[in-house]
Image: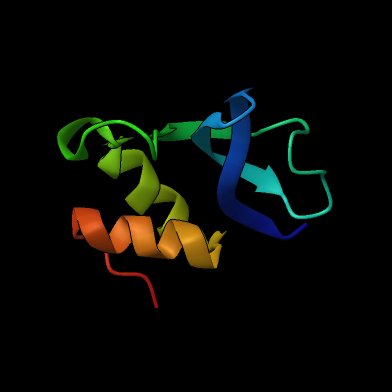
Length: 83
């Protein structure tokens, strides 16, 4: 089973927000999750855009979970450097 850290979309039309989740790579974008790591609100002010449990994120990365390109960029903003 390949595990990925990726975004799960919520919200209304033109008002999206995303949860940063750990999922089996075979699941659809809005499918069943294994764990939730945080939230990403692209429309909010800069300080409230990204809420992340860094300890959980590092733990999943250490276990071998792969981050999507978008999540990798968000992690870099928080100082979590992904290979």
